[in-house]
Each structure stands twice: as structure tokens, then as C-alpha cells.
Length: 293
Image (cartoon, rainbow, N blue to C red; front, side, top):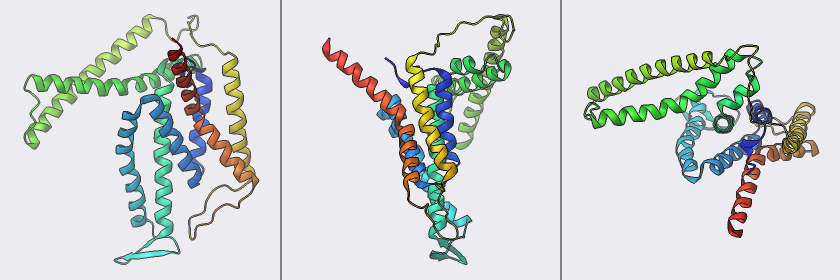
């Protein structure tokens, strides 16, 4: 199966960079919502409906928090909804907080999708020869985050089975948590030393060292690279020659409707939903071949 994660690592990195950078630096609710929906659909397609429900339970309260708290810190705007003491709560600050929250959450989801798709070996493949030490440290950090979480659950379960992790009272729980953290720090230091010794023994970073790679640039990679380049270039050109951002203060001013704006929206939507379409196509193909057996 040729899913999205099986394409060339350099193409995957360029894709995620274009999607995340456009979402971060374009203050437009249409772009923010499109990026959020694309990331949520892609993660639900890759990880399943259970993971999607967990993401909803985590990020929906964050979105509400962003929207509600911004009017209490920013009182700009011409449309006053009500007064809270001497401070005015304006419609513009409320909408600005909502759009900012959607943007932040969409970027976080795309980073999660990046971690799920671009593994540490792919990162080392792209940057291993350019900056071997820095790429090793970055890939190790990305790899240690899920390992650290899994190990913390194992240590907590082991201590509960031994009767050391007390659950009653604030101070017993704090002592149990400190024992878990102490075990995790020792484990992480030992694991880091073993990894460094193993990489040194294998000659990592040496100029004369040859490397084996399973990644090759084929015609499917070329087709995906060409498609992503066309869509990313269309969004970049429209952003450069046409105002696509919203102005929220002092009043909300939307960009003027025109052909370039619609091209911008359609190009970015196609770019964002491309991984989900690839995953769905491969799953449909797999189901079709299963039915033929």
C-alpha cells in the first residue's frame, strides 16, 4: 500500500512546512478552519475514531478557553457586547480570540500529524549528512517523548502493584509521583547514554561512513512533489499579490472577493486535504482487494 507516510521523507517535510507556515502566518478564519479540519481528518484516518474522540476532548476546551479569555485581556474593537465592570467586552476581540484559538490548535494538530508521519529515521535520512549531531539530538528528542510517556505508565503500574504508589491524600500521591519521576530520570539518562554509545560504535557522523537507506525517489514521489509544488505556489502567489487576511481591529474588515481569493482558498484546501484523500484511496483499494480474495 502506498499511504501518505510511505512517500519520500523530503517531500513529506516540504509538505508539512508549507501547510503549517501558511496556517500560522495567515490570519483568516477560512484558512484556520480548513487547516483544522484537514488535520483532524488526517489524524482520524491514520489513528482511528478512538484517537479522534480523544483529540476532541482535549482541544475543544482549549478552543473555548482561547475564545473566552481573549476579550478579558484585549478591549479593542468598536462593537461592544456588554461591560464587565469598567471593561468592555467587544465582538472583535471575541472573534479574534476564536480565530487565534483555531489557528493554534490546527498548528498543534499538524505537528502531531508530522510526528506520526515523519519518524526519526526519516529525519536522519534528510538531515543526517548536513548536520549529523543536531539531527541526531532532534530525532532522539522526538523519539524519547512517546517512549517517556509509555515508560511512565509502566513505572506507575509497577509501583501500584508493589503498593508503593499511594492514591489516598495529596501528600502520598505527591510522594508516589516523585518516585515515578525519579525512576524516569534515571531510565532516560541510562537510555541516552546507551544510545550515544551505540551510535558512536556504529561510526555515526564519520565522513567515511556509508549508510543504507530504504528510501528512493520514484515516479509517485515526483507526481506528489509536482502537485504539492503547484498548490503551494498558487497559495503563495495569491498571498503575495492579494490581501487575504482579515482585519479585526477596530472593526472587522474581510478581504475583497475576487478570483485570486477563491484560487487561494481552493488551492490551500486541496493541499490540506491531500493526505486524507491519499489515505482513503489506499484504504478503499485495500478493501477492494480483500473482497476479491
